[in-house]
Image (cartoon, rainbow, N blue to C red; front, side):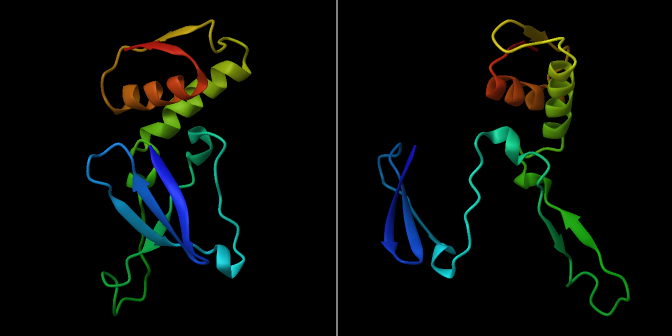
Length: 129
């Protein structure tokens, strides 16, 4: 649980209230520059918006560019977030499942199971792995 308070027009301090020693994180906010902060309605809206970065030092002196996709920035830190979201959303759209009524069962305990558990919890499904 975090509490946010403005420390100036362009910075915020986030203080963790779960820890005995308060951890303060300061980040420069772009609000002062007039840039809108993107806040998702729920975690499923964050899936598939994985940032990419050019590996400029790796390709220095080369004619080509290499970009790396930072999957660690996905909500559950895995490409399997997309699979879990796609499986559940497709079944919902087909009218085969609905939150609060359907219990999902998946015979896996790997990253696919983690992705499914994440989406199932966010959408209100019970899940047995």
